[in-house]
Figure 1 (cartoon, rainbow, N blue to C red):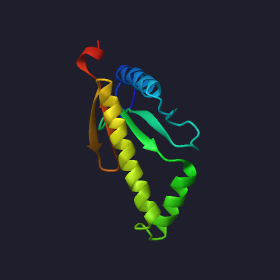
Figure 2: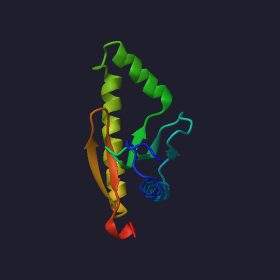
Figure 3: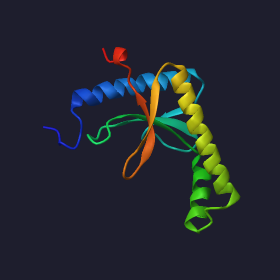
Figure 4: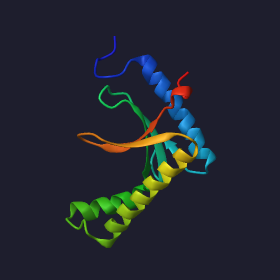
Length: 132
């Protein structure tokens, strides 16, 4: 029996299949896509399945290259969150999220920005006709 914190296996399988379709679409558009949990070095989009009952769904986001991410982290931890490179990083992050949403929606899917207590992300919603 599965922990009640998680969605049931059938629901998770349906979400994983949908996530696979989303990855195929993003790759068809020419975007670099990596699977959640794969080694992370270069910048790429990630499509992930959240299997928690509180926030089940397929989410996507952009991750900067590790080296740049580490540089930004060092600035922020040292209190320099207004450093020009941090500002640039935030601008690029916002632009990538906007591009991701426009591309996903160009394929006929719907997105919704979700905020939870400890994280936020772009959810890609399944269309009713795709669920059959």
